[in-house]
Image (tube, rainbow, N blue to C red):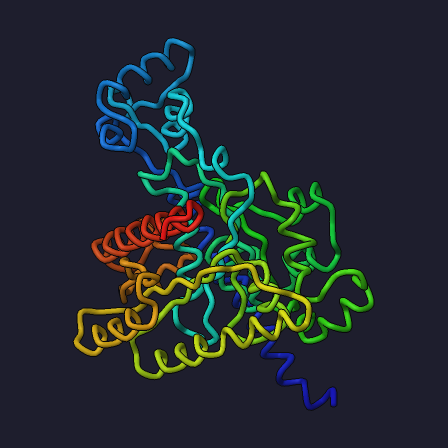
Length: 399
């Protein structure tokens, strides 16, 4: 048996080395051009059109803050301001504007789900997490966002923290669930930051796949008092109240214990709908069987709590057959189909080459067209605002 695996072991070793090399190359490129934590900058004029602000309000608030000792950066030796996202949030704080956490105490759990692979599920998740945090019109909310990666492929981990996407990672979301660690250890030792402030990550590892395959047995042995489909809710998310406003759960495109835990924990399901015929048909099959899955979970003692499944188009282009697919989606979802799409733009996929989302990517590292990247950013921000507004309507009881 050992001899039979010799070639596979050589390939495994080379693959691991290549992963390390590729990650190091990207990291070195970013270090060389000074790209670390993502920071968006504004002039004072940029702030005039933000919610609850105006020219007079910005001038007065900035002046008052400077009198109190707050220092805003300037561009070189000029008098022109270089205002960061953090500065904008401080301006709103000075104005006494309420943040999202002042309106809602519990984190809102969102799962973007589809049992068809390759439909931009993970790309949608990480793009949405970054875009919600950095959208100009949402800075006043000072959103705190966590992405829980439960997919052993670790794609979300790669986009948000590539250095944690190689080989075995001990402190994964799955391990945190099973070990039932306390709140302090969860925050300090398991949750890590992404390259955008206040967008955090609970990573995954390929080893999680082996855990998922033995989930029932492991839970019976180590968590006898916890339902196997409620481990995510009870052992992890329940400890994050007061720490996050939105929690995104990204699980793999297969029906296993991790996906069941994700569905049980979710306040909202979102379904990415690709227009290609084969992908669309597979998505329709998933939607058709989703109530059966929810019923099965309930019969096994784990009722779901989500009240909505919101659809949105991905990989869509201005083509006749794609418009027909969108019409089908509209007929199925009705008002629960988002008015904003994530279109088929090369940048959404190519950003993975530099371990970025279209939001965190910059032209200094991104290998494609900057014009295309900017177009993708604009689409991502439209999508994020549409999702935010939909969630607000749901939470406020507006249908």
